[in-house]
Length: 470
Ligand code: MN
Ligand code: MN
Image (cartoon, rainbow, N blue to C red; front, side):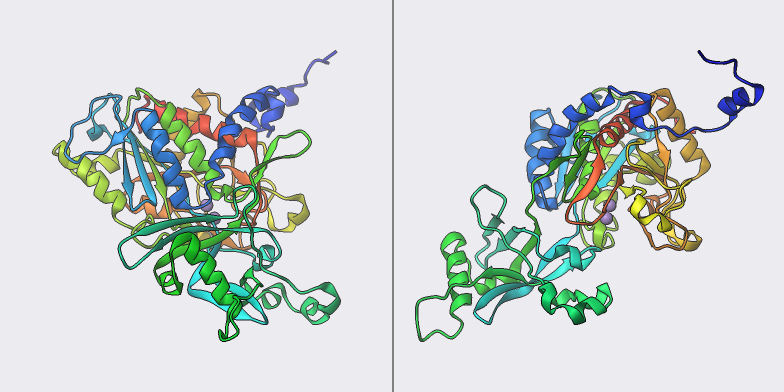
């Protein structure tokens, strides 16, 4: 029996926020989230930006997308895509309104932290063969020792051929690892700081230990490994110089928790947002405003290069669209809005000292909207305007989507950014929205299935909303 509520209780209900988890709000949500995440787990098997693009293009075609033709005037409901260098995808669904009224953009990145092979990687030492690496993105190096790794990438040979390589993902294929010191001899290592104890120059991948059978050869194990690669792929040592190869955790994406409410997998930063973004793009069929979904690359290394968000590929594409209708790209972007879909740090009770509990995001409380990222003093960040935040809030509230805010952590605990700053530079209103992640940038990252599914619903609501941006 509920007792009559006091005036104060009623007032508190009316005026104060009471954070609740998605599960408390709608217990049955997990079922739909489970179903959604079956497809997500499949997507997570793409472990590099190239693999995501390779996987996504056939999916787009099966959903009626055609390759973009410059100058073509598309009709409302038409869907098309552009592939930039096999590392970016731009996917469009034409709206009923002319693009001159602005478009709805969602950007997520499809690169993740990993170990890239150095240009000259193969060496032999003490009867073993190794591949030298240079880590890509921000990693805690110690986490990459002694875990099973797989090799991915492409090799461009001198004769114009491109060979795709993936070893260690399929059942029965060999895998690799970086070795670590046994505890018995680690007395000195244990006294060092973590940064000192795990040097990036020690992130060498063990790839062989058996010699080529010829007494006259000096580096027999190295030669044997090169010979195996030559027999399988037709490559020689020189071809490493013109390759993009990397090692990533070989583990398969998995359900985590006895309640199977979570996903544990490599690369969820930012595949969890990329998948939600892609699914929202596919599900949007006849929107009021044109939608543009962008898969970005190089986010983890600062968004430079031809496929990073600092590249003109995005602007050039928009300019081609604008030209078709005799418009200026700047006039379209001023009226548009962009969701920078990237993950945020979920509060971890084991490390409470770096979180500010009322402004950080929690696993299972829904998509996390971040007004700003960066670090102390709001340095170097897109700080979304109250108007932009208000517009998004309006859309999400209408669609009954529960969301939370999230600062990355305590003000001076560290810091980090997203591509929102690279997007808003185009005078394009941008706000970060993503999924809270535990163990971000670790070989296995943890997310809530309900958050992933709700992010999809949120992006879809944003794409489909007929509301005019203020
Ligand atoms: Mn990210
Ligand atoms: Mn990241």
